[in-house]
Length: 154
Length: 423
Image (cartoon, rainbow over all chains, first blue to last red; front, side):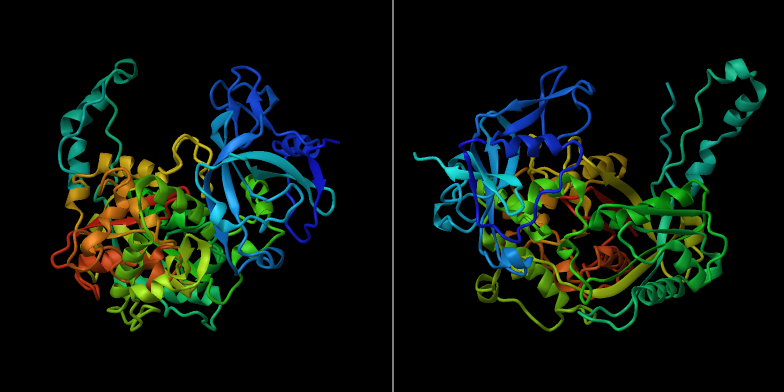
């Protein structure tokens, strides 16, 4: 198990329900690795994962490891009405992170104050488009692992 | 190279396209040489069909009648408006999210033999596509009297996003675990980026909300009739998903609407003056990702741009000739995005376009003159189609004097559709 992974106190948050194409992303996340699908033919990264390459039509793919660094592209602060577990944490943040390795890939996620902190742990005043972030991983109740994001010390 | 037809469009033009010379050529040549001649021009949609009837139920947060009953009431009202008996209906079009299917509707209202039926997906992106599909079917002889409708109890029924069992495989796995749960959250994400890139402010979104509310104030059928919206009320309202507040979100409404589409030729014999379907388009851009369009090179352009290119390519006029517009407004930021997409202003200028009362009656481009989804009723945008028809009949409660052209759009963000109507 990666040293990047921590247990969390999350309860009632929706687990990801992977499809066939997305399953490897979550399997790598469970090992504390942020990997993106790339075409085995032309090398282009693509997200969300899909069966074949929109550039060269190859059905071959591989999962490339990312550095896990990026920046905040946008963010929202949801307020109720929400599902109960989310309403209990509102307002929490949802960020979209533009990956430094592949700027056209922007992953939704949550900015947290520490790897094991909850999704409402960051002061909203610290949220800012362009802020540099790096990935961490959190284990939800039930053992599912999701990527989360930490502000880079600047 | 096929010969380009330059005659005006319409039923007369379609008849003249098959000239006697062309007919002679077709019969006098052998099969081998016939394959060398130009094929006949395909039928065009331009002004070939018209909306001749509109109907609706009351709008409310809660109506007692079932969605099926509401659908039938709206459809029968539209047919009565057109002066066409239900037994002559042979085509239906609606949304994939419509719960009452064609079989139920057809047998309840007393339709005849139905030879065309179609559904379009992607929620509110389907609104104008229902009319577009009927127009295409009628223009190509697949049917003669088409009914499009939407019936929905979104006011008293469940919010779709609360159903956690209905996990869309993609992209829900990439968004919902993080609490990006609702359409409001997904659009708020684009809105924040839009504000950052172009300097749009909450005042611009308020301009949209206020224009719709002022128009609803003149419309007795609107849910927000008689309830003006001040800047102070807007700015102090509760957040739904920052940066979007309560009044940036559409209403939650029970209600149903319908319209009747026939050929331009038949429309001349109907009770009401025809409103012609001048152009129609759908839009699914390359590498688009739905409402969470965060994964292509340019997330702040969306399906409106694609639909607009097709629409203006096939129309006789351009954005500067549009007298009034009904623009899909599930959320206020969709209006500036759509204004850019449909070419009323340049990229990033949609927010500034809303200034100085531009969207109000008497402004540069009056928008959502019945109140729209924000202040009349939210029935997946179908009330924008019926309001477009009223404007071109001259019967809107916020009538643009002398309006002869109207753009109607479906949802921006999702795969969309649009209509250019003319009187």
